[in-house]
Image (cartoon, protein in one colour):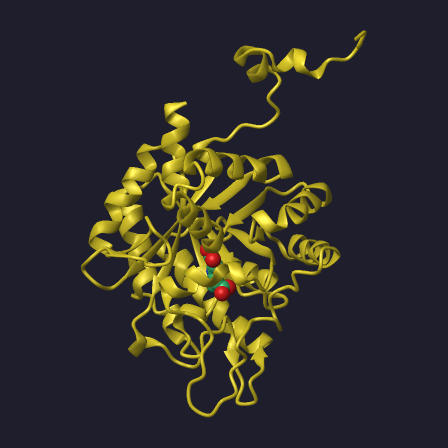
Length: 333
Ligand code: PBG
């Protein structure tokens, strides 16, 4: 055949392929989520093989391991003791709570590591919602934001670098920005869960923290988060959320989940010049682990291909439970 263009010319050798490769993964792109609890053991999480709830005593070692592999940011999630959970989740702004203590410890022991936090009431609420649930079963917006602001300030005081509101209340980014600035934390950034969908992919995470919505007493508790997290059918609405978050002062915008929402990552990339993060969530992680355990897929190849797809879609940063494994594989080349 007399073909002028033969795209295979540039795929012929590893050197040529490396020269024209458009996207690269780097361990510095990863944000590594870690679960912490008050206990003294490291508890494996049934639905997330390879992930654990860390005791504070063991946490430093895992953070140091991530650091040594080139990971530069972690995000902390607490499994809060049942007895501390209340309707208003007030434990979330206890300056001596699990998360502030974990932050102070890591800042002391692995000082270079950036620390992101999650701002929402669900791990602290006996109702399992990200906001306060009214007696009528409505998740209250403005009342919740007052608590989220206190939570953010306590996390900043403890030393957090990036505050991550994951609650999807309207106006929370602006309110948290103002609260941080008022308390002298104008240097602390906000990584907003900008387009967070009401997704079934969070199942294993809710098991890890025992934080799923649940009925307690006579209050009618919504069984899902559809009145605040986004409808998976909507894409344009993500742009509206992104415009609001930018106006309100977000420093980084996140799309969550990741894999089923690559189009949303791509859209936000085109709409904004801010860094974009993708959250490769618990359900995505567990599906890969389950298939790999059965020998049905090649875990390493699938994970690296998936993480690369986030970069190709336009993400700068990737929150992923695979962070240490992937960093190790990248190092091996
Ligand atoms: C809490 C929160 C959730 C996740 C991160 N922060 C769960 C939820 O909204 O129900 C999910 C993360 C994952 O599934 O890996 N607001």
